Image (cartoon, rainbow, N blue to C red; front, top):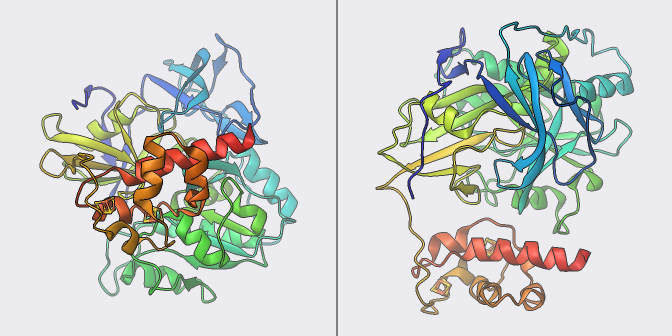
Length: 424
Ligand code: SF4
Ligand code: SF4
């Protein structure tokens, strides 16, 4: 596969006091994914209309979606989001005027009533995301929802700091955002899913009541569904929101966006994306306007077209491998992994040798090979009977398989198709 990179809009500059955080220059055009998971989405602009930076262009499930550019709405269309799922998309072309709306900081969040704070966060575009087969982007639950756990997930806490070294500014902002979030859900316990390190210890010291997920059960960066199930203590029904069960997943990026909205008056119109891997020369955190092309972010990070062989949006085990780089960055994209030709693990789908390793490593005690075989024959009902819905999508079966079968991909497909047939 040849991934095409275009040298445009790829200017980057370090943000003050943050050695690992870079800001992308404003692009000439953005395609803002406004619709998530088929939720009710209402554009509030029309094609041809002038918009200012920070102005809402759509409202999705009560949450505003803002333009990161001053410009003109070129079109409102349906286009693929970063996972290749069609979504209502507002396309904005930049103008020279650079006008921005004034978004007033919230101010004193510690003594306010929670409903007012919640309404403000909705208008600032704050959402939560989690991956469960597909990536869900959801509005925060209302403040009277019975949220008992806030799960901080998907965070890679590099750099690992030396004793005494201060936290980078972005982590201070994320910590402040988490404090605001915990005010909104005062009965909730804060739970961390992350690798241990001095950075994490510094952050944890500011939340004395927080706890880490059990290390014995939680290898580094376990996928989201397994982490949520571990917190809940039971299997999460496919398609069922964890928030209905009192669990609110949140990322560092979202916590930082909460702080920046409340304290700086900045709506959520830029995404903090961690770019990693040997396919780029300058890995790090990139602050990018919503709707920028994936390829532009990679160029900003110094991607080399000759080296770059594979790009995964999300984590290595169960992220989405993309075949195009002209997909827009949305609020669900928090990390991009890059691989060189030498590193790519090519699935070959050779015949199963019945070694049993996939069964041995499956934490859900499923028979991955059997489910994958049903998926290959499009026997979705049999895959369901075999327990596909209980798969936590950890990816261990695919990783261990000596026949290099794309087990996880087949199992994910079976889950989606079984869920679909249950709805129809
Ligand atoms: S991805 Fe594979 S190993 Fe992991 S839970 Fe699903 S079937 Fe089991
Ligand atoms: S690990 Fe691969 S080769 Fe071994 S039983 Fe499972 S599918 Fe077959």
